[in-house]
Image 1 (cartoon, rainbow, N blue to C red):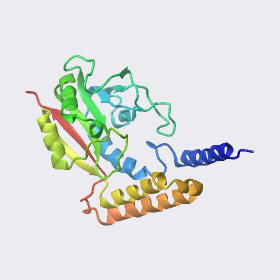
Image 2 (cartoon, helix red, strand yellow):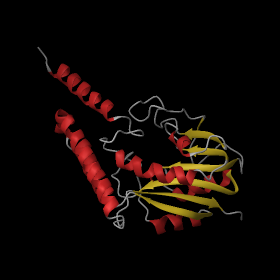
Image 3 (cartoon, one colour):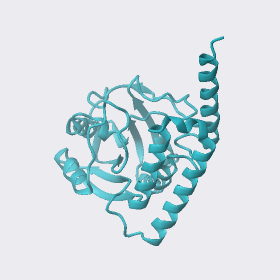
Image 4 (cartoon, rainbow, N blue to C red):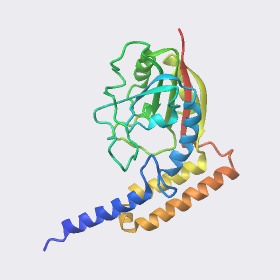
Length: 256
């Protein structure tokens, strides 16, 4: 009797059960490997996103999570993505997914110039081979003085391979935006050195150590412990910011 296939099915069920227990990636429970990333970026993006008004395009929207950082009473959310983008029905990513209204590339947005009052780019820029061209197209569809809400990783592992090209420092982001015709209004670090160390250990255990699938309950305990220690350390030493987990920022399209 061939026991390999039943064993593989059992292992996948075991893995999926515990991942369900962790919660979706974008609404993670405290012991999720991605908890710190969402915890720190959510606070910054919600604050920065509150200044956007009018019609807002979310480019590379995936499951449409950019909507949660906007005021629904003052904005009209317009999600777009590639046809190959994350499925809004994938419950392991989000339980409140919203499908793109239009499938398109950031390099060729099918909208007239100055069609939008605001734009969102969440963890998109690092996946662009030529971010300057992408930002130029975002600038084209934004009205003068239109605002751009963005987030990019820094001390975060490679993801979305093979299309993961770069990481920026704060000064590098400012220069990239200025070359594309934007003025950086505000830039915030999302998590410091301790958060970065913790999430990288979590992700290493989760993805680089396949044997851990058998010990997922213990892995979740380890992740919860590391997350707790990182949160405490960030409070005790908030100046430890040489290795930020990510950057969130707000920029404005220059009028000329």
